[in-house]
Image (cartoon, rainbow, N blue to C red; front, side):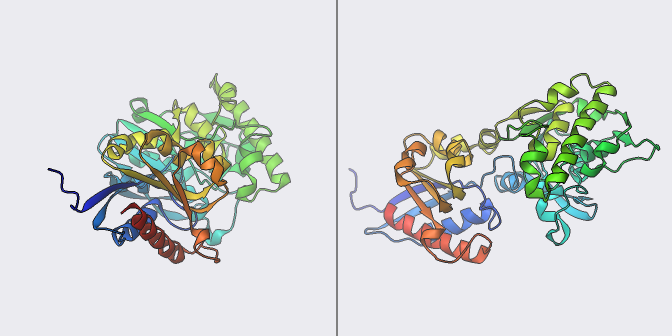
Length: 384
């Protein structure tokens, strides 16, 4: 006979994205779990928390993979302006995850000084080389957070290509050097031939023009109008020189959706034969979300801002779509989505840090974590 007085256990899956500029996805999940476990409701019972920090192919992808059970491997690479940085990749014996953000991303610029013309993707290529040394079956290329707009010139240079100017000088590989390319020596590493390359991204911009890498993403990397025009022209020159070098599909790939991601690194990845997949959905599969959610009663997800972009297919939308009929709770730094739109994401409740403080928590990790613990406790008390 069922014992109506038996303590109940609510099984929650905590599956957030990062709160950009404040907390990693793992830190968000940890803080929410601490609050949930401390909750007390009107009766007896407890909250069981399973943590699944997520990523969508942008910055935080390596951390999310490591949190789900991948091994972390570290390697020294060239940062966005050439300084040495300690980068990490994730590897499970078959799949390696390599990301732009922790190799040559905006957050790695010395002193936070933006370098729209001098930044390079070279370190990302060096991290790919390191991943290849582990003999993976596939490499997932996570492209968010780049500091450069070099079309992947630096990345290709690290992977064995050589680009020279009219005087025969070997180019290092930065956005400002794109229009100096005179000759291209194409070289494909043998290791790449047997390795599947996957670009996990939800960016659909082409490489060139008003919706391209320089025009759309250049300003956030410090590019002014003159820089944007120079970078776009440089990228166009880059495509022409690759075509001359024998890449028959170089021009066609420049117009491919996603070629403009990460300052054009997406374009270079396509040149190497990578295929592009939805970042959010790919990482949900990679981190085994479907199996994890089948063992829970409630799914808690979130990101820094819940807004119209979320509805357009960002990670919380993918989580909600896959969660079935179980309640879905979202936690965010802020929400620009009115209550009558919650149903568009099948959300039963949205909690925001902004509802708990008048202070700006966006760049205050300690405050953000404290508020998430409070929110977790409040969610737990409502569930019990």
